[in-house]
Image (cartoon, rainbow, N blue to C red):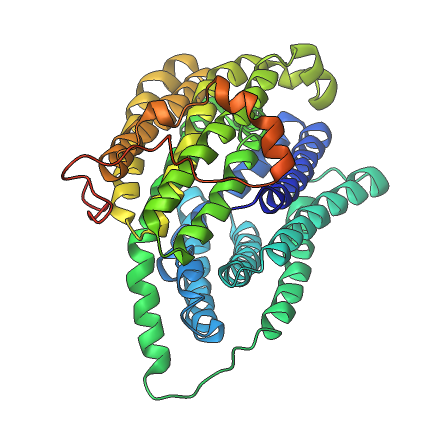
Length: 446
């Protein structure tokens, strides 16, 4: 992994984060806390509707793209996405009593988002990282620009505006992504049983890989439903602003984790990637820690000025989320390493431990403390799942927590790093694994 490559991905993700912040600001400012809460619930419903799409796709598309024709992967992934979006939208309609119009928009936007995700992941699997980054920037930009045009230009302040803007924001980039996919040298090969074999391979890889994503979604957003039932959409709106600000910081570790996952998938020497992770983790924690500190120091007056008077209550929630956000940045790097090894059981167990903590903490804290309890339960969940992964990584590689935390040498080496533009593996920082912990051990058995 080179620094220019990492910076390109980081800048793209920063742009997406800023544009997403624009969406949060626009919906909070012009729809109020209740309207923002409704938008957050729609986004959460959409994520829930899409939850099982990765059982025949997801990150496994990146894993299999170098090995299979992208068209053989695209067809079963899109067909499964259609079934899941239809079933998910109908299920949410029946569960929450949202009405047919809401369910129809949920299906339409969910399907476009699913198609966009599938095609861009195939491009990323073929190491078209710049295309992947630019397409995601275009999607976020279209959504922000569309909302701004309607809210500010047409002076129309309705939650339904978000639905129509989403059609445009996902539809046009999906068409562009398909055109880029068509430029790849892959062709449809009509060989007997080929599509069936690819579908079976995709399903086998996806089941283990996506279970962690399902559990992660529950960790991230289950508290929204608890809070909505106990305190209403307004409380969800305030919490969602805090979460959006806190999770924006994750663009730093997500940028590193995205590139690291692709590198591990393509690498012959997996242990060298573990040593590289140690170096990357320390630098990532330095940058993330600085961002978390800045977030924790945001004054209440600034939140009120930016989002409106109802959102001053988001300030204490940020302080409760900060420790978990910093800890989870390390989780992203560790989980991407195990995913690159197809060691899905390790990630699933870690995320499952976090989910148990989410359920326990939400049941105990949200009824008593409301949104503050939801924020605290999120931090406790993040710390729990990260601790599990740290133990698994230590057993597998011999690299412990002390070698992943930044020190003075990392700070002193920043000028040299910026000059060289390389992120070398930390040969001195990773000691050999003790007996029984060699690199050849199956990491799926922690």
